[in-house]
Length: 378
Ligand code: SF4
Image (tube, rainbow, N blue to C red; front, side, top):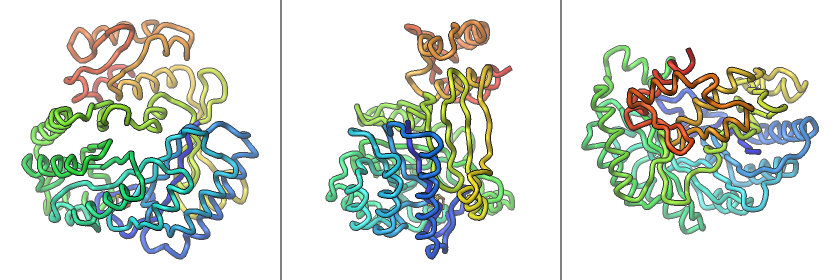
């Protein structure tokens, strides 16, 4: 099983962000730790103990939570769901909020992977995004993490930012690689409804790079990172050999996961191909009510056709693709029974590859993966 813990606090809210996170609620962090520990107890009572193979502490900005609070929270959760020996344990942090005390506590509780939100190398782009940090903070955070003993470091970068040129993107890639992370995530900016950035785009105050420019940035990321020893293993993720993120791969392979905290989702396999997905409320009050009553999670049963489609959709995100043997093991039938014609048609058009019992997207297929998924769903 994978364990995810959501920390809904940030120093200040970035202009593009629609994740569940708040700034200015530092006085609620201790209460939040109590709620999450209570949820872990409730979940352990309900589902029993399961081996935890990966842990991911995400958010929000986990590094805004004081070290002592974080320790109390993790000790409390791990009492019910202790990580197995050799588990991958990632903590997310943002430059400008990371401290040695936080790193020491996290490493002391087992953290062996750090994911840092660098996003861009240029102060003007970071400002435009509403980020609180500069490149000097990224350097300081990386140095601090290495000195504390982190041997598996990931940096997040963003492309498709207003005012970002291909040359600026190249500079961000180069600066990131110069820091020698083991892993890099490159996400295209998606302007989400209701965010200040979306309003600036709608009003014409800002504009996004042309679609063609954005595609060129993505292509450049793949080319440049490959030339520096980072293999793409998923649409947005690149790693040095042996450093692909096990937690994310588990998610794409539909390994059961338990999410604790506000807005966290869980998928605990019930039996065979049927899975129950549950999502915690996105509000503080709603989450508190779930902890008090044990009820109020949004629930969805994923079964039959939906489970099969999900397996394809998530599997095709990864460069290793969807294995026919694994599909047969999960669903007791060949992938061709339901998808044969559609897979074949996509292959004939150069959008899918079929090799050694595995289906995967071609480079061209990756660019238009959404329309491919629509076609597979029909
Ligand atoms: S740091 Fe991350 S979670 Fe927090 S506001 Fe910025 S983008 Fe959102």
